[in-house]
Amino acid sequence: MSSEIKDMKDDEVIGKLDKVADSLEMTSSQLSNVVTQQQLDLIRERISVAENEMTTLRSGYEILITRTAEHAAEADVGIEALADEQTALERDFAGLRALVITSFVLATISLIGLIVVSI
Image (cartoon, rainbow, N blue to C red; front, side, top):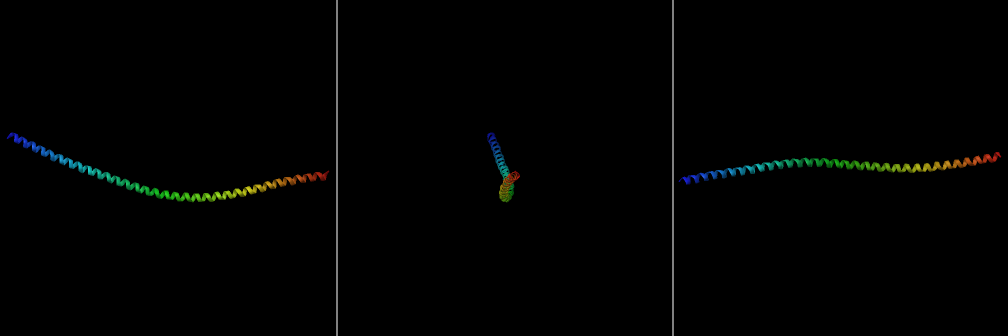
């Protein structure tokens, strides 16, 4: 009989240990789910922040593109104006050069004429 009581006690201890193991397994699973849910919530929050930042960056990038296009158009107009000014300056320089050469030739002819008249 003592062996039966001992077997019963062993069975009770094993049953209790099984209950404790099941309880620990269930608790561990619940904690794992809680951690996983917290991680998912954190990931959702980070994704939301990243989406907001991407939207802000996209709008800023579009503004930058628009401004760059406007500045490029202004630069093209300025370059065209500078090219026109350079052409005009080159014509003016050519005219001045022609006038200087003409005045030199005229002065030389006048000087030769005075010398010839005075002899």
